[in-house]
Image (cartoon, rainbow over all chains, first blue to last red; front, side, top):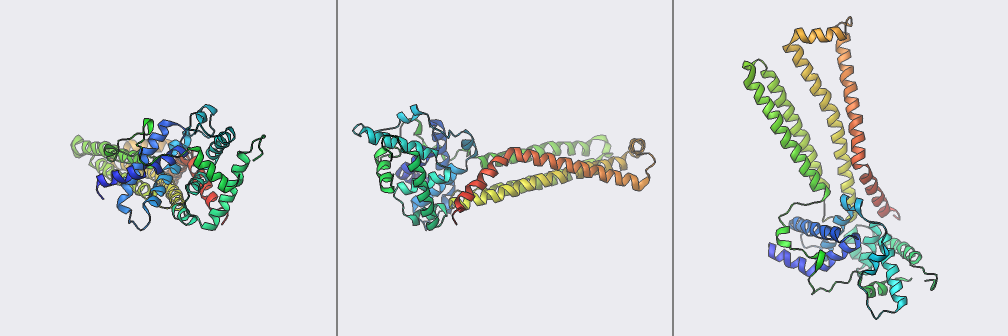
Length: 166
Length: 218
């Protein structure tokens, strides 16, 4: 694959990388750094990509490995989220107040998950099958189902509101 | 919140929703082409660069010292030059070993679990190698230097040792030197261990926790 073809590939799948960056970094500068590092790692690991797995599987592996194992970002990463940061997130103006509140709580809850749980929930919510999740994460499908149930419980607790009790 | 509700809320949130046909703007905009030839800012890449810099510094410094002793003093201290060259070979082997372990540490295209296990395994080996090699190198080089000066400058050497170890005899003297070097090695070992723990302790703990988290239900 030539450099130009690689850049086109990154353009086509750039959303995937940005999702990982947004999930793992609260700070825009950290997101920018992580994006660049992921693209660089993809380029360097390209010769080892045999196309036996899907491109998205390979990209998720590189992106998540880079995000999870980066020492500097893990040290500086903000574990909790300020309310003003959340209010800056894009929101559909036609959403009902209840839905907005629920999604805000969901975002905050996902940010509070561990790095591994974030990876699982990202793949799950992005509609990947357990088989694909296993290929990316290296955890058995049974284990992933168990973990996903636990994550759901965590999210359920974290997104509980006194008004609605959901 | 049930899983299907969760998915619906996720899709509706737009939190990670990025249209495929829209180029990123603002802080997430990148120019990938020059980026591909830039240096990685990841931790392992930085450690590799530091090891290479240490190797280059050692070659320059010890090489220069060895060259000096080869040329100066009319060849009287030529053994010192060889000693420094030997030390340079030892250090080169040490830094090469460290670099190889670092190179084996990162596997970005591996499955996440495998990648974490690999990183932990090689990081622990890297620390063990650094700590033990440092603890062996320092007394070894100190002993060699001491032996050399005893051999080359016997009067001064024996006067100094004689004052410090008067009445101990040859065996006592040898035993004391070995004991001293052993204590030095132990001190260096403890210092290296403490330093490695300060540098990498938290990261190793975090890797262990992450692997345990991925293994927990199995």
